[in-house]
Every structure is written in structure tokens, then in C-alpha cells.
Image (cartoon, rainbow, N blue to C red):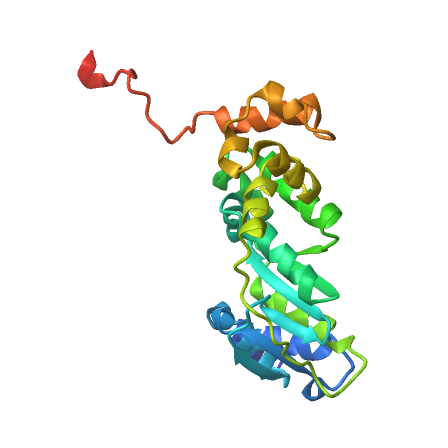
Length: 255
């Protein structure tokens, strides 16, 4: 009899286990909860997990964030790799500006294995510098999760905290085309640079291009930036990528 129970338990699929855990993770009736989810999150599998436990899911194109879990609470979900990518292309800080502009309680959910950082970038300090800027300068919490199933559990917990059963609402938000915000986003991707220092850089040099060309001496003269930070910025900008082959590097064919 015991062997039959064990065999039956082994047949239980992983998704079913996840759904069971989600059901047991809150005493609230999940069918009373509603969540608005961005269209691009379909492929993550999270909307299906949320539906399966009874949460009312509305999928649409969200101009800001990925999950609206309460009227003033929005969550931006990023994989570790996407987080790094958004730092270098300037998306991260533009997204932070818009999250803060339109919601009182924004949060960033960072999903995956943080150990991947060493494989993605040569300088992990850029990653941690970006995290520091998001948390300290923008006052947006970053919550790590190891997988989609744990992300779903977190979203359920956040949604269950809302005091109303009427559900969340979708705000009318215009797409951002603010050039200055995009310029600030580029500069905020530099090590140790928040929005205030980025503004001072633009005031001094006039454009992101001129700022990136500025010497160590010129950067260090910016109020609040300092020599140490100026050195880190120039070191990062001037470092040669390990992915670029040196022209004068000899190969076996040259010997």
C-alpha cells in the first residue's frame, strides 16, 4: 500500500506541485484577486500559473511595468540577463523614471541565478552599481526570485495585500518620448551615477557624447562626483573588451 502511495506521488507533475504550493501559500480566496499583465509576459508561463490557481488575469499592452497587482502597485519583471542588458542600453533607468512617475509603489522582480553575472559581464560592479542606484536613488525595491514559479508566488502574495476586492485598474499612460530622460538613462548606466549626477554632467558637457569623451580630470571636477568615481568611469569606458581579438596577436599559422 505504501509503495502505491509513493508511486502515485512520483506521478505528480512539477506544474501540479507548483499550483498546490500556490494554493496553500495564502489563506485568502484567490478567485477574489485580479491582476493586469503585459502581453509580453505570456511566454514566461507566469500568467498560466496565476490563472490555474483562480486569479482573474487580464492581459493587455502595458506602457509601464509588467504586472499591476494593486491600484498603485506595479511590478517590472526582469531576468538577470535582461537586467544587465537594460543597464547598458539605458532602458533600466528610463523604466525606473516611468515606474516612479505613474505608480506609488513600484518594484522590480529580478528572476534567475545571480551567479550568471560573471558570465554576462566582465565587470560585476556595473551590475551592483545599477542595483544600488535603483534602490537608493529611485527608492525602488529589487526582489530576487530563482524561477518563474517563485515569481508567481511573490505576485500572488503582493496581490493578496490589496485592501479592496474590486481589483486593479489600468491607468492611461502615454508613451515616453522625452529626449532628456533618455539622455539621463544613458549616463545613469555609468558606475556610481544617479540621476542628480547625470543632470550635472549634462549641464557641464551639454550632451551624453561629450560627457563620455570627457577626461578623468574634467569628470572629477563635477560637484559630488569625485576623483574615485571619475577614475572608475574612465577605466570602464577605456577598457578593451576581451571579445575583441588583438591585431598583433600571433596564431599558430604565424609561427
